[in-house]
Image (cartoon, rainbow over all chains, first blue to last red; front, side, top):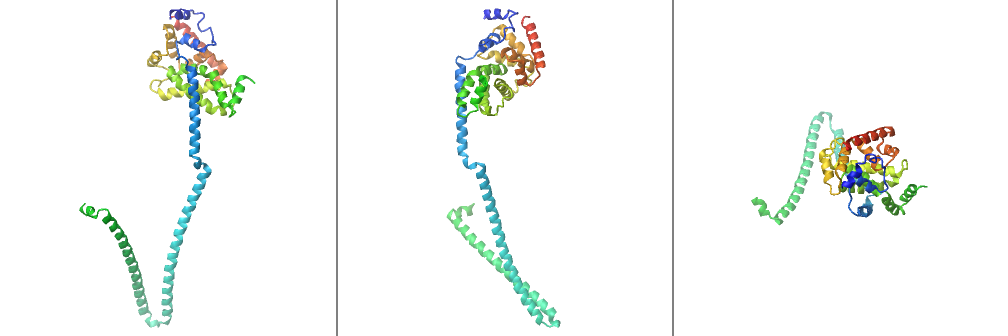
Length: 177
Length: 179
């Protein structure tokens, strides 16, 4: 230690010696820094191992996400869009059928009224209008009542199935709670 | 073709890359270690940063365009990695990097791989109290023996500014160390 200090005290040499080939001695001499024995060999193998691990992980990741490549993603997205379009189209086509049926019914109804109206005398037209409107209201009311009945029946069927479910899984418990 | 150019060519060749990288480690590992060690102070930190530096070099070697020498390019990566390390792991301690606190020196002196005598501690103390710029310039020039042109490429500062900074630091050290 003393020798080292004495050596460093030679002012003329200090900072004028320049860089020595042995970089460790150079640092140790002026900064007192040490390194563990055989550090660079160990560090080299550690760095190479880490790089190899990184490469392995990358390869594994690549294999795992093979199906997630862009071309597969585009295909999947296109398929989804197609299915969505198909669903929307099917739903809208069903609605058109219903509308067409309703319109047809209305047309038949209208034609009958029109034909009958031709045969009605002018003096009786007010009474005919009242009667027709009354009939129309009655028919529509009847139709809507039928629809309501259907709905009630459908809901009853559904409730029955739910009832079975509750009976199967502890109806008594449900009632008590 | 010089040694570095041949090495770069091999590093960019997929089949020769691993052998060339091993060669690169043999040539530059120790120099980069000391460059990093002077910035991050302790051996443990330097070891971490050195590993990250070489992994970054391995990953980015294909992007190396030879605008500067391989040596300079690697030094810059090591420098940036070290600065990133300081920012990420020692935000409190190195909050104001230009005024390194006494606690930083304590950490350095308590490192099991620091074995400095009084003069060495004194020198370390003086260097630690330089501004960030002065410290890097002095260390790169004096300890790493880099030319002013190379330091200028690494730190992106003009050569004339570097020369002036370096001689100022030398003067400060000479004045303070023998007080």
